[in-house]
Every structure is written in structure tokens, then in C-alpha cells.
Amino acid sequence: MDHSGHGMTMDLPPFTLGRGLEWSADPFFLVACLVGLGLYGWGVVRLARRGDKWSWGRTAAFVVGVLTVMLVMCTKLNDYGMVMFSVHMVQHMVISMLSPILILLGAPITLALRALPVAAKRGNKGPRELLLMFLHSRYMRLITHPAFTIPLFIASLYALYFSPIFDFLMGSKAGHIAMMCHFLAVGLVFFWPIMGVDPGPHRPGYLMRMLELFAGMPFHAFFGIALMMASSPMVETYKNPPASLGIDALADQNAAGGIAWAFSEIPSVLVLIALLFQWYGSEQRQARRADRAADRDGDKELEAYNAYLASLNTRGR
Image 1 (cartoon, rainbow, N blue to C red):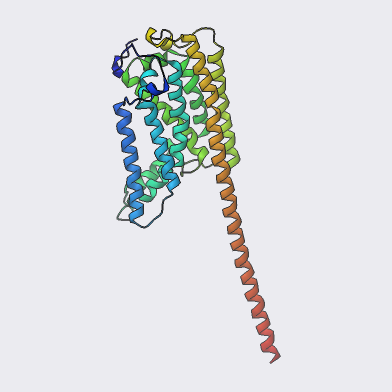
Image 2: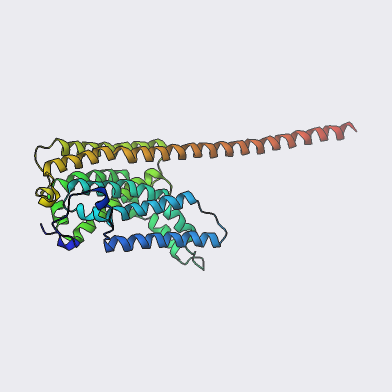
């Protein structure tokens, strides 16, 4: 297979972490990441000029999330991922499971809703109103529903890798970019309702979010085990690695399976911790609201009792 569309040669030296992290930018992802960071920065600056606060933690999460996309798409990891199944699997796991979680923790939709200008006249549709319409559209309700996101999450592994679709997409630069965008998009729509940081069409309770999370994760582990237990290479693209790499195709596939199996645990733990913190914060807010309501009720009762005493005093006089 010719990988020249990616600006690489077939005589890549054996993979090392140092070589993998060398700069080798994919123009599409480089521009997309810089635009994303620029728009987010514009939103933060706009809020600051207005005197509104925005969490530095959210900003850091979003920036790190975008940088993880750049890490796997704008370094030689992307070049090696074209000929090494194990490196490709690192790319897939990061861009579909780690990057989306960090980006969503940055609450970009909430930032956009707060920063975008509102329509000047009532009844008109400005950027903010159009975004709200899109968020509550039938399309968004469909693609963020668990009945859609969980099967899509699973199909992105089994239907893609164990069919000719993967080899077809890997055959061209446009196909490879489309596949990586698909991985990122699937991760975003899968984790968006679960994280619950940004507003969306579906806002399930915390227990339901945990169930949605654990409904999808085991399939990643099973996929990894299937690759590790295979007795022959299963993906055509990686059956004949370049001799210069000095690797065995089956051993590399086993390593890819181990990466997929191990990586399924990392996002589960990250999301679970985030959910527990959100749940605790929600309970604390509800408790404070209940206390304030009780205080108001107590004040009303005290006022009524004082008024009653005053009326008795007046009658006595």
C-alpha cells in the first residue's frame, strides 16, 4: 500500500518514543486545533472584558484536550500509525477516549452560549439563538441518545477494523483524516451526555450516566482481547510492515490489542471521578437550597409568632 499521500517514505527507522514525538504536522488537524484554541480563547477574553468569570480549570482542560489531538496527529506518531498497528491504536484511543473527555470538561458549549452575542431585536435569531436551536434540534436529540451513541461507539471498533472499510479509508489521506475525525466525533457524542458539563438534549441522572459509561467500555476490552488472541494478522493494512521497522506483524497486532484493552480503563476512571465530584457538588447545592428555604420558612414563622404576641399585647392594653 502506498502511503506517500501522507508525505512519508516506507523506510521509517525502528520506532522509539523520541522519534514518535518529533514534529510532523497534518495540515488539516493543525489548522483545526489552532482554530479551536483561538475561538475558545476569544470566548474567555470576551467574558473577561465583560467582567464575568470563567474557570481556569475548564480552560486548562480544553487546552490540554486539544493538545492531545495535536500530539497524535501533528507528530510522527501519525506517520508511524500508518504502518504500525500498535501506534495507530494509541492514536485511536487518545483521540476517541481521552481528548473528548478533556475537551468536554472545558465546557466549550457553555462558553459559547455565554460569549456569543444575543440578537439585537426580540424575535430575531443571532448566533446564540441559532446555537440553542441546533442544540435542541431533532438531529441532536438523535445523535446524543444512548440508543444511538452506544451502538455507534461499539461499531467504530468491530465494524470498522474487521471489515474492508478500514483498509479503504487507510488507502488515502482524505480517508485517514475522515476516520480520525470520526473517532473524535464519536467520542464527543458518547461522552457528552455522560459528562453532563455542557447543556444538551439529554440530561440523564447520575446513576444513568454511570450505566451508559459502563455499557460501552467492556466492548473496548473485548476488542483488545480479540486482537491479542488472534493467531494471524486480522487487518490487511498492517499485514506487511516495512522491513526497516524490524517488527513482526502479529506481535505488533498483539501489542495493539493490549493497548486497546488497557486504555479502556483509563477514561472510565477519569469520567467516574468527574461524575462523583459533580454528584457531590449537586447534592451540596441542593442541601444549601434546602437550608435557605428552611431559614426563610423559619423567619416567616418567627414573624407570624411575633405578630401574634403583638396582637395579644394590644388586646391586653
